[in-house]
Amino acid sequence: MGELRERFWELPLGQLNRAEWEALCDGCGRCCLHKIEDADTGEIEDTNVACKLLDTKTAQCTDYRNRKAFVPDCLRLTLRIVGEVNWLPETCAYRRRADDRPLPEWHYLLTGDREDVKRAGVSVAGRVVSENDAGPLEHHVVDWDE
Ligand code: SF4
Image (cartoon, rainbow, N blue to C red; front, side, top):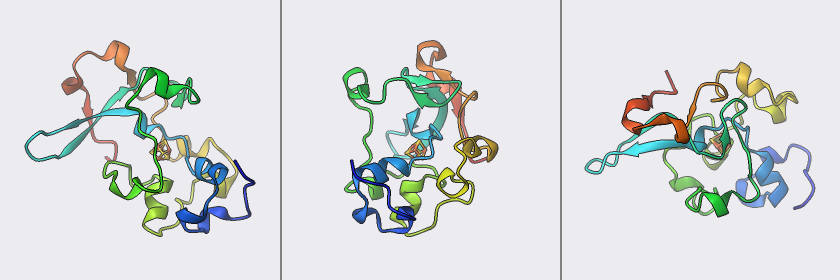
């Protein structure tokens, strides 16, 4: 995995080792929510419906290591595709660093507190429903940036 180097989050994404890459995630949970794509326009709407593996109270994956076995289409963000995933939230560290922008000021790598993503109102913890309980996605369209 590799060591976490001092202020590694300021390095270009391509220079990060695996541990540093993983550590960039703030755990907001936004990428674990279903989206609806308009077949004609390609426009993407957000929902508050979570993947069945997401703990809706903490916004953490309940089986991160084995998630692909249960959810084969779970997105694995890599350097190669990070610039193409257009639905990552504005706050996402991968998106920001791919654009050579700094981490948001509340990011735990800067503050030392993983709970700050909740205080900043960015985490979806406690604000989502599992796909096991949700029913039709169309009833759950939300605008997380509001
Ligand atoms: S949107 Fe970005 S920061 Fe949030 S959970 Fe997904 S990868 Fe991590």
